[in-house]
Amino acid sequence: FSLLLKSGALLAPLTLEQESVVGAELGDDALRVGLFACMLSMVILLCFGLVYYGYAGILAWVSLVLNFLFTLTMLALFKATLTLPGIVGMVLGVGVAIDSSVLIFERIKELLAENLSFKDAISRGFAGAVGVILESSGATLLTALILLKFGSPSIKGFAVTLIIGMVSTILAGVLFLRSLFDYLVDKRDSLWIRF
Image (cartoon, rainbow, N blue to C red):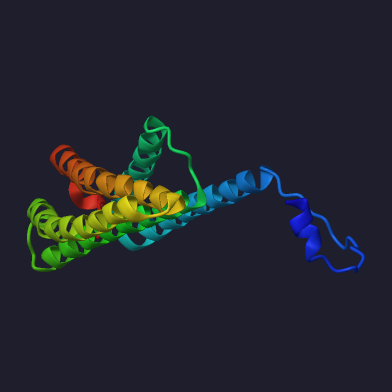
């Protein structure tokens, strides 16, 4: 094999201009920066939710944090390695969870503008938005399953976190958030929850 390599070699001298070594620290650094970006986005979302939706935005943020923790827990249970494509899948899952909260809250705002009671507006707002959320999450879930079946290893990591994110969006972003609203409306005065 070495004779084959030497047979086409030119008689020019080799001069070393630059040498660099890439170690495992680069991967750790990229993951640390990616997780920092996730945490920073969570803080920005908390501020936005509080300004735009008042205390209801805090409830949505709590369900978003639960969604994020559920995704991390499932990844730990499956002993999955968190890679950059996996972080992208988590961020996309968080984006879908935010979208579901916005859909629900905007529907509740529309119903409150029609002078419905707060309890009825919450009930009908969640009922009206759940169909759209399930449809969009189902389409995303189907796409992620196709990526999981036919994708390369890095694409499969993205698909796994996206699948977990879609499931946790339905559990935390819809069911848990609805339970929070029902509890607070039944037990407390609902006037402090502003839309």
